[in-house]
Length: 299
Ligand code: NAP
Image 1 (cartoon, rainbow, N blue to C red):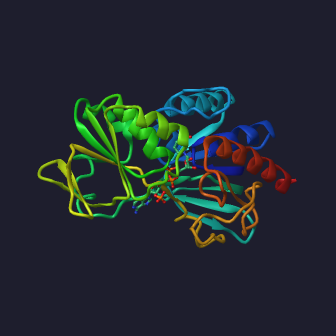
Image 2 (cartoon, rainbow, N blue to C red):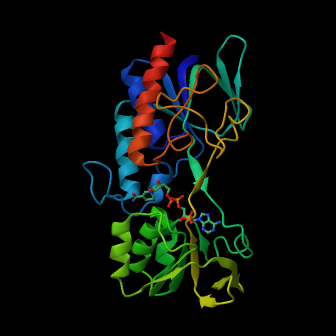
Image 3 (cartoon, rainbow, N blue to C red):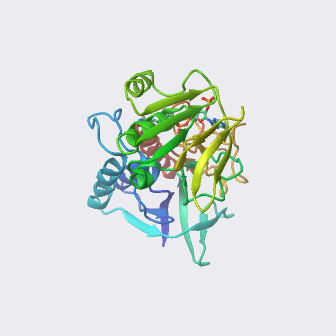
């Protein structure tokens, strides 16, 4: 069978694309590497800016999206795509890690982004032994303990707020005085007695023995912590398409809100594409736009 559209990625962008494709009567398949919740949002402890769902956890929001797709009988396939190829016929062939293939007339690539590493000594060594990229996943291990959150964006601020409810002490270590994240969240954190801001400082090294015991700052200061949450934003997952489509200087796939890329028939949606605001709401609208553009292309 040749599908009308293969959707790679089952985060909010991919699921929204699937729902719109389904309602446009297209044969669609959603390909996901491994189901661990609905994309990056599953790792957000609290989402306060998705219209109509104030305060919902990212995991629950994602599950609501997924239930919607399942209700509309969206077809899912758990496979790792290792290659995307456009054939002479104009169709796309997706090759999986077990060497099987499927074909489709179009592709919506919605593979999202992954956490940016800090690239400092100790980081790799202590992953799973005190270094984490997901406060909601690992926060409960630090009940009554001391943790550091690295970064000054919304993820770092939200993580700090979440961890403050569990840990004895939270240090937010950020390289600048100004925050990239929401001012309202900063104000809320300032009111918390167990949150300390360490601004204009960079962590030079994560130290420890069997597990993390602290961080060393560039000015030589040492802070004792049991856990380090790196919240340095994300990098786009473009390995499968970087040789097929044009990327912008930051490495995101060049595309406007229709998701159309430099390769006819290959569309992108969500965090992987060039855009200003990477949020669930923009990912969801990207998915809708890309599926609509695909339907028009197929006509
Ligand atoms: P981000 O906005 O890119 O913030 C990354 C933070 O990490 C920045 O403060 C940056 O410092 C710092 N950083 C990056 N590399 C660093 C390095 N090598 N050394 C030191 N510091 C480093 O990423 P994000 O917080 O994950 O947010 C991504 C997007 O998702 C944003 O649009 C955000 O609004 C959205 N988001 C929203 C919510 C929510 O609304 N609840 C929650 C999470 C994320 P500088 O500031 O100095 O560059």
